Length: 59
Image (cartoon, rainbow, N blue to C red; front, top):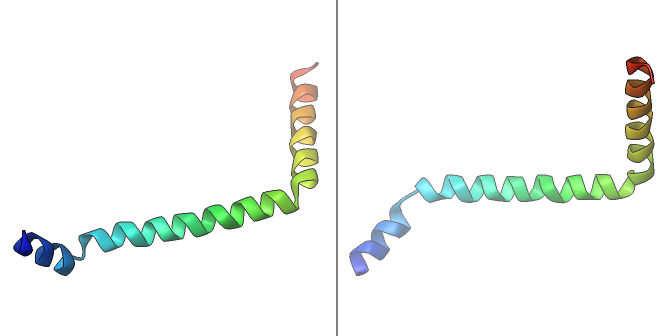
């Protein structure tokens, strides 16, 4: 059991996953903050895009 613990501490393979998880978490927090801040503007932009697609389709 002690050998397993020592090997786990020495290995660096799991660190890559942890770093990517931290980066992904930070990106998620920033995305949520931006969406919360610009919610109305984003909604208006999406609605304008949907309306443009409707008009392009002919209806």
